[in-house]
Image (cartoon, rainbow, N blue to C red; front, side):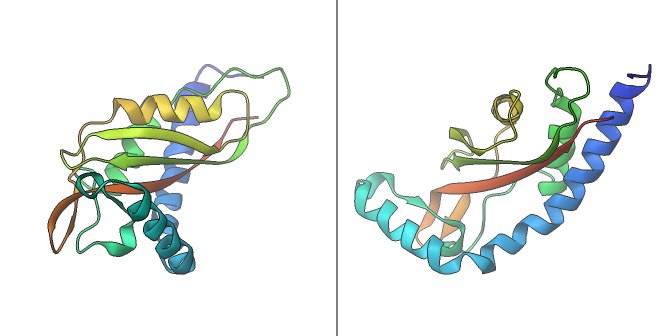
Length: 158
């Protein structure tokens, strides 16, 4: 049964989960180093020299949301609308998106890698598209486009 304050409680729960996931999400860099290096090599081989897309492991400075990743998760929590589900369906899980942070800080090529159904991935992609420009990543050669991986955990209220 939905209470009057359920929207507020959902957002509070969602923001708390996002903050937790935000602090945990950086562990993926060390766990997938070999995989990322292989992917970066393939990306570099298939892209033209002028349009290389880098992985975060190849950078001096990673792309960053203005205010930091915690502010980005707060932005997502404030703008994410839990999709409608049939009665007695409880949504809980991780949505995984990838996108490119371009040289100018804009986000392009937003893709849903994994979601939990009921439109959760589409809603997460919609909110990411609303994001303001990021601070782009840098290599020793300058500002570059970067492939960014973002996990988002959601949990609906009972």
